[in-house]
Length: 223
Image 1 (cartoon, one colour):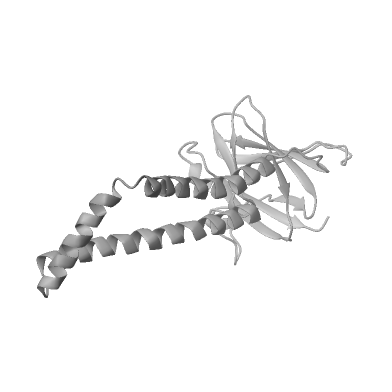
Image 2 (cartoon, one colour):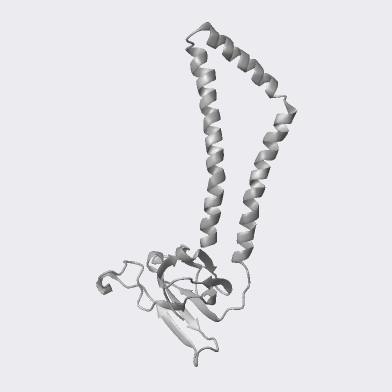
């Protein structure tokens, strides 16, 4: 997620530059070739507009300028593409995880399985939404669950995601993760949580009538 935010800020810098240039160019065209042309204050302004109009006609066949304004956008795209592809491949990097768990989507709740050799026996539990009558003070409506997923910080974690019925999507915005849960298919994504806390997400696939009450709650604690 940190990489996504950094890439967003990096690309936004170029967007601001392009917006300023295009906005300045547009205002100049509207002002000089519409307002002054139709409402000139003097004959000098009319002559000045006609001179610039004839100059623009010459610019339209200025091959060197055409090369420049073709290469500049291409250069900007290259400057944006390089960090974009680097982040894309970094997010799909296959690591050697210390911990692996499986997230299974159901209509309409999540279940989790821990079957690593780290544990003496397999751990399987369901995670259902807490309804308003079950909430304690300070808990979030439609985000809190009865059995939150507990994960360690500063640990490489592999998440295997699948579904038992229809398409679901295991998504936690704070982690920059959104991965589909498909019946009969295993998808995987890697986690590295850098700080302790409680993080929330929801199913991001339209999976049925109770799609809106299928939350994800992760409690990150020290290993």
